[in-house]
Image (cartoon, rainbow, N blue to C red):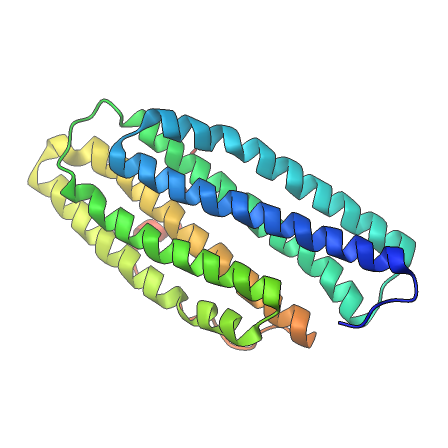
Amino acid sequence: MPGHIVTSYDTDLEDLRRSISEMGGVAEKMMTEATDALVRRDTQLAQAVILADKRLDTLQREIEERSVLLIARRQPMAIDLRETISAIRVSGDLERIGDLAKNIAKRVVAISDQAQAQKIVLGVQHMSDLVQEQLKDVLDAYASRDVSAAHNVWERDGEIDALYNSLFRELLTYMMEDPRNISFCTHLLFCAKNVERIGDHTTNIAETIHYLATGENLAGDRPKNDASNYATVTPGA
């Protein structure tokens, strides 16, 4: 991207990029640690994830405020305006990813005293691993402005939905087989839904990358594959 006559303008844009990068790092760490806490039933790690969300909230507010001031002062056009708007969009998605990771961590605390077979958690872990890969790939695509890589993330959204549907049915089976599994599996269903929603936010970021690079919204419907009625439930805190 060519430099501007006003050097401080380039500095402002670079500061936004650095803040987005920091937010991405915090969000990735929160999701990884929330999943690890769930698998290991580690309440101490879960509490650390919950506390980390404050940093993400602060960064998101700072990015939004700086972006608004930049627009007011510089009155950017074309790619510069898209860069600023995209920073606001991406920071919003990353902040929401942090909220969802925090929700998973809260569920870990809630089920810490419930003894259940580890195999029940493995499906959520596998789904989370795929979404973590999506998040890493889309953040790399944003940093490098790689539209092709962003499209790849966008196209993988249906895979996450299909996995969620399968996991939904599996957990329902555990609940029907033994009523003692109902409480634990209900918490896991909310965890799985939070993971699926994180996948949706990575797809949002992929669409923002396309807008940033082309000035146009990504055409066509998302490759959704979520057929479960449970998808209408809002993940709980």
